[in-house]
Image 1 (cartoon, rainbow, N blue to C red):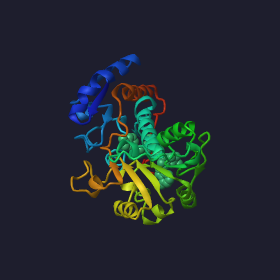
Image 2 (image 1 turned 90 degrees about the vertical axis):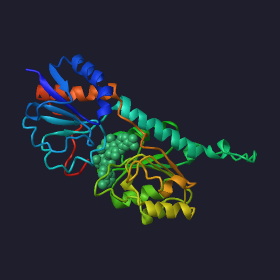
Image 3 (image 1 turned 180 degrees about the vertical axis):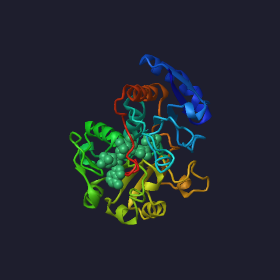
Length: 311
Ligand SMILES: NC(=O)c1ccc[n+]([C@@H]2O[C@H](COP(=O)([O-])OP(=O)(O)OC[C@H]3O[C@@H](n4cnc5c(N)ncnc54)[C@H](OP(=O)(O)O)[C@@H]3O)[C@@H](O)[C@H]2O)c1
């Protein structure tokens, strides 16, 4: 009997995902039916985006797993009707690679002071060379799949990288701190700070007036993690006071960022529209298909969400 796979995401996604999902499922020799509309009681797996129309999982009585298309799960992890295994997206070839490129590019922009040369209306010859990367300590809050990969890329460029996670991580060449003392130690040494934490009740406002004040004068902040990680008013105050040199923000409490939000017009803020990294259909489909194969073979699913931790 075929496994029934329901694709539940924003409608436009179906056109992008149908063919890659079929290819990936075929490649693993899975006997399946795939569609965007099937009787809930017959669905075995849901390929899922938390903003889809499926919010009540109760009618899916034989569901074996929900397989997220996104890395972030904060919009579904508290759903009491989602009781089956719930896997998030980890995709080295697509999602992770995209994040490494975004983080590396924006880090180098600030490290090299590129803005001064790109926007130089008075043709000023200001021959100040930037420091070498070895003299620019970087901190990464969240040393998981994405934080570790970004840390490795920056380390290979010569930046001294220190990470912070909930539990101690072993990532080659990147010391990992934990706990509040660890956070404060990372903040005090980070001239460039990168936020790659998930959004959970414990990570909300990780950057607030107190923690922002611990960063060195003139530090840069990159937030491709989630909007609630930052207390926006405190960040704007720290930028206005000159303590923080610039913040490059990809994620916000409200998205799209409202037109009247002060971030849009702030000279020390760069807004990117939640594009730091996107799930790429071909590689993400292979991750989904592998988890379905595992489910059918009775093997443990990959990348299961820890409901208690919220990510
Ligand atoms: N902007 C975008 O386009 C985009 C794209 C993809 C993902 N994201 C965001 O990036 C986030 C990270 O993704 P990921 O795949 O790297 O997730 P992950 O592998 O789960 O890593 C999360 C990291 O954060 C740490 N952490 C969680 N709660 C913490 C706490 N209370 N204190 C200290 N550290 C804590 C974890 O610690 P442990 O290692 O100890 O568990 C882990 O190191 C996602 O949740 C999502 O919000 C954004």
